[in-house]
Image (cartoon, rainbow, N blue to C red; front, side, top):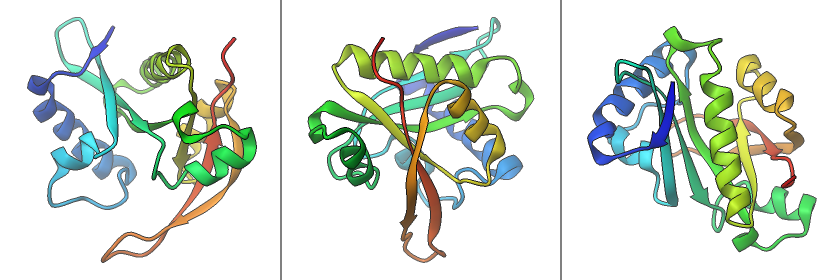
Length: 169
């Protein structure tokens, strides 16, 4: 497995991957009219894919600016850091057929390492009932902070849990 920067040529495969995770796990919870725009996100600064030996995209993760993100208040309360010293891990997707192969762990390690290299502490949100992702984050040393309710236009509110990544080693 290779972790590499996502290219524009990967977006179609990443949207198809996101569709599979949506159908299998309900993530993302609500399917958007423009899934490629959702995948990228307006605050995206970098993104990576996990690729199998044959070139198949197995996973995706993005690193987003924290300014304006709903995780920011909780992360600031927990760390005292300003927005430019925080980052948000977003759109962590692993193909249902590639689970339990270390794909999610490798993507999470890559995005966390980049946040640390940039002098930032990462945070993220997760649906608290999603045992697989919650277990991954906690096993990787992420700390549960506080609940967050997020309004999504045209849909029921999302009840999420904010997590803070480990500090740089």
